[in-house]
Length: 67
Image (cartoon, rainbow, N blue to C red; front, side, top):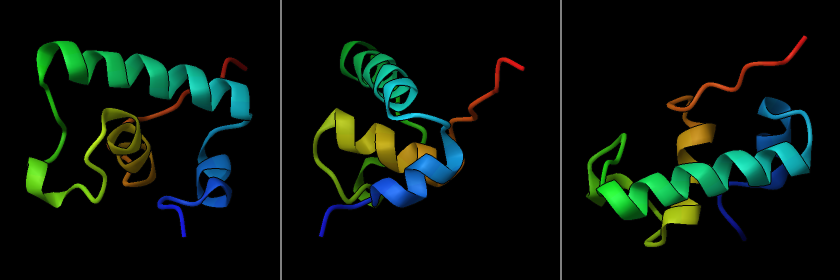
């Protein structure tokens, strides 16, 4: 099973396209600056994309609506 699930992520983010944009930006910051929101041993994923998804699920990245 893939962690975190897309259903949990879409409860936080309105659309898949917005999710991709947010995760790509966050993964780029992680890769360039090596700045993580949690200690590295607490992530389930080894890659930045997965780690960014985990941060969204845990509420470490807040998503604001444009409304």
